[in-house]
Image (cartoon, rainbow, N blue to C red; front, side, top):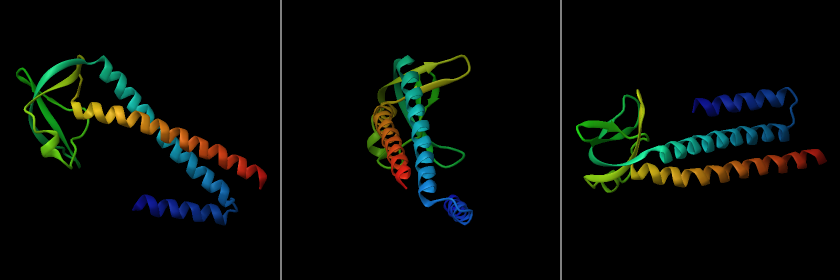
Length: 152
């Protein structure tokens, strides 16, 4: 809510300073495009990490609550417990995490690891093309706005 109020205050100040509304709209589109580019980069890096990871068989243990908002799945490989790289889904937890043994992908480093369960793989494979499409759409919208602004 604070972000929306802050954005409204900034837009009103820009209008008082004489900035054209089309310029403000173009700036908003650029900000959304930047967010979409960052999201695409996140999913691309996640995909690379997932492809570098080795397939392993894991046992689902529980859904653990984070210190902040949200939760994550905890799996066991041998005697060690691993947290999933992505947050646990809040809706349909009983359907997604019902199987005791599943296949996952584990990228083990010296100090850090990334565990990608099957749900995370689906999120990455769906999120990358959707965020890339959003990026393309916002960039196309910005180019279209630029053309419209050149006629004004």
